[in-house]
Image 1: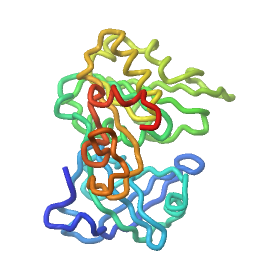
Image 2 (image 1 turned 30 degrees about the horizontal axis):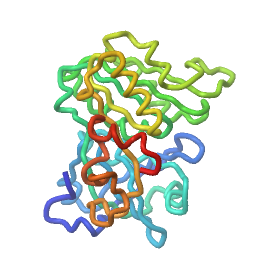
Image 3 (image 1 turned 60 degrees about the vertical axis):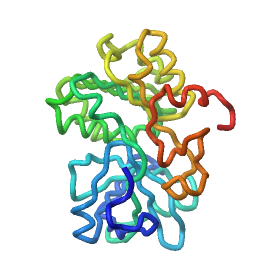
Image 4 (image 1 turned 90 degrees about the vertical axis):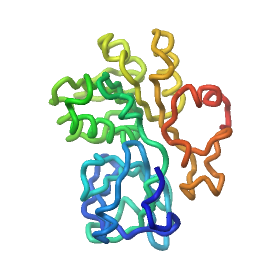
Length: 282
C-alpha cells in the first residue's frame, strides 16, 4: 500500500498535533490529525505501516503508526528521542503543525490471521509497530482467537503504554507478560530476556501466528526457538528497521539484500529475511 491516491507521495500533508503523551523518559506518543478534511477522510492504513513525519527546519524520519486503522480522526506515532529530528519532535505541543507523508510499506498479515490465535512479541519501543495489531484485533474481537503479548525491556522504567497494557490485560482472551533484563523494587514481571517468556506461555499461545518487532537478535532468537518447537516458518512475521529516507525505495538507504525495507517491508515473513539476519552489517 502506497501513499494516498491523487496525491504526490513526495509532498507532506499538514497534520496538527492534538496531543503529546509522555510514555517514558524520552519516549512520547504524538496524536496527529490531518488538517485537510478531504485528506483526513481519504487517509487509510494497515497495521504495521509507517509514515514519514516532517518537522519544519529540522528534518524528516520514518515512524510506525501505533493506532487502530478504525480511528478515522487521529493517527498516533510513538517516538523515541535519539537524534536531532526526534528530539525536536518529542518537544512539539498541541496546536503545532507537522508534515506527514504516507502511509508506506507493508502491514501485518491480519487477514491471514483471522480465526487464529495471535502471539505478539516485542522488545523496547518495538511494541509501537505491534500496538496496532492488538488494537485492531480487539476492535474486531470476534474475528480472532486468543491474543498473547510478550513485551521485553532493558529496565522497568522503559516500559511504555501503561494504560494500553492495563486495558489489554483486562480484555477477554488476552494475556500480557513482561520481562525486564534488570530488576527493580515493585517489578512483578520476569527478570530476564523476553525469549524466556515463551516458557511461561500455554502451548496454545504459540500455535497461531507470531508477529514480532524489536532488536534483530531478539527476533531471530525467538523465531528460531519457535521453529525448534515445531512451529511452521510461514506463521512467523517480523518488522524490520533501517534508515528510511524516501519511503518509496528510490534513495536506496534501506536496501536489504534484494529488498527495500520501506516498500517491501517493514513487515516481512521470517522466511524471507532469515538468511540475511545473522549477517553482520546488513
